[in-house]
Structures are given as C-alpha cells and as structure tokens.
Length: 223
Image (tube, rainbow, N blue to C red; front, top):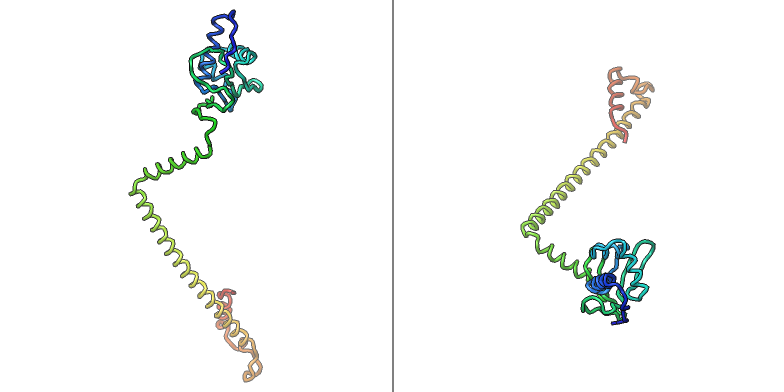
C-alpha cells in the first residue's frame, strides 16, 4: 500500500474527516460505484457530512489519495489509491487488481472477478428448484385433471362440429338436386306438346296450379 507521508501541519479535524473517508472506502472494498452517479451522495449521507465533503474529496483527489469519475454534477465512482496510513488496519488491494465494488444503488458488494452471467444462471436455477419444490402435489393433480377434461371437451366439440358440417353438406346437396329437378319440370311445362295441338302444358293448367308452381319456384333456394 502506498504510504506517502502526510503533512504535519494539517488541522486535526481535516485529518479526522479524511480518515472517515478512507475507512468508508476500505469498508466497501476500496471503491464505491454508482451507475446513476450518486456515489458522493451516498458517502455524504453515510458519513453525515454536508456539501463540504465535495470540496474535501476534490482535495484528496488532488493529493493522490483517491480517484473519481465525475461527469457534470454526478460522481459515478470513488476509488481509494493511497490511505496515508489513515483509518483502521483494514487491508485493501491497491495494486491494480479489480476490488470488490459497493453499489450505491442498494445492491450488495460483488467481487470484480465474478462471472455475472454464471452467477445469474445459478441463482435462476435455485429459484426454479425452490418454486417447483413448493408446489403442492394435489395442485398438480388438479391441473392435470382439468387439462384432461379440457382435451375431452375439445374432442367432443370437434366431433359435433364435424357432424353438423356433414349434415349441412348433405342438406345443401339435397337443395341442389331439388332445384335442378324443378328447373327441369319448368322447362318441360313450357315446352309445346305435340299431342296437345302445340300448346305448352303451362297454358293448359289452371290458374291455381300455376300459382302453386310459381310459389314452389320462389321458395326453392338457388344453389
């Protein structure tokens, strides 16, 4: 760890505040990172400091004790580089390896060398196993029964639909045949008969018979 000598003429209160910052960073693995840029605000709230903390962090950065990622008015990371032998004896690796990072957004600290994809897959597997284990076997049996009944109802409904379709097709065929036959009859009625002096049958039937024939023709659907 770097141990640059600190000035002897510094005020005690300033050194105490720097010690608090150093201890805070050490307690969080040497760095605080916030994806939303609230790293400084988190530290200010935790240490009970006001706006003066921002000026102190700037001075500590200028002295080489910390480095910050500041964009505009937001601080995305604060990392400890040199503790000046301040704070407690907590060991922090400042040799360049990736330290554990404390998320300012409330997430737990995660070592930098952890494979997050593998960790997520492992956690998902645990959740699924626990969810499956907590399902009541009786609930599964009821679900299976309901599924079987639904399949049976669907099969019966499909059979009825097929039967009704067949009936509709048969009725349509009957209508087609009947319409064809009536058309044939009409043509025969309108033809002149040789034995009747060339007069069509239609002219030799009574008015009531003609009306009956016309009604039949109107009532038969055209297919």
